[in-house]
Length: 315
Image: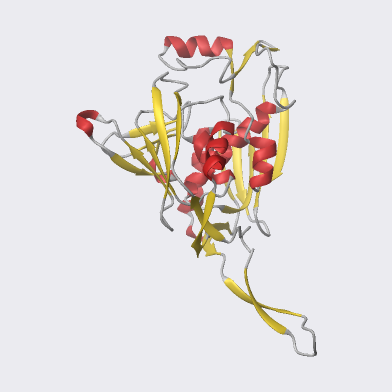
């Protein structure tokens, strides 16, 4: 499959699970979609049998306190979209309709692994249209307390540089950088689980959040101890999961980014701020696409053979 072309799913696939905050059951159906559709969420199960289409774009982010929430002016919303969005972006799925009958995406095992498995079960179909990209042209920086993030130009592709800093010895200060492609996403990022401290979870329970949180879908920390009997999936699973969240949040740009995202103490809020700052400065980015180009290759004689190839300038 040529990465310069748009892709969608070969067939529909269903996913079932519980929301980590609401503990509400949800049925998610991923459908193939036409070229240039992007990722669109069909929120069903609203009062009086209503349904709403919500584009998975940064301008529809309504909340970032505990997760990323997408919604519209009618009050229709879907929360905790970041792990599914990361799976779609990480595997280079450009177009899909995401049907969900509840208010929150299922948490599954706390990572993107089961979403990846669902996509792999049906496979991807290449579509006859070049993929569009957002190329960063000049640095854009945002800050929020001790956290900061910056989008910078790069020669090609997307580089992610994430650093976290926690007082707990089990986490401490961790930093990872990735040149992102589907192989790297699968092997290095997709299986990293969300995490939290027992003391914080108790407070969230009292406030009506994290009602579906458990050792089956989160890495739980009590002081400096990891409570999960199986331990960690990676020695630095915490920073890898933050990278997963970043990928999901930045996918709300609406197209893959060509650039570098460097962030310290990232969270959903600062990721959303970075996209808002980028799109607020029209000179900071441009829309490009993989386009046909002519290349000459050596022939059997003195005259070269003219060939047509799809440019990989954006992959």
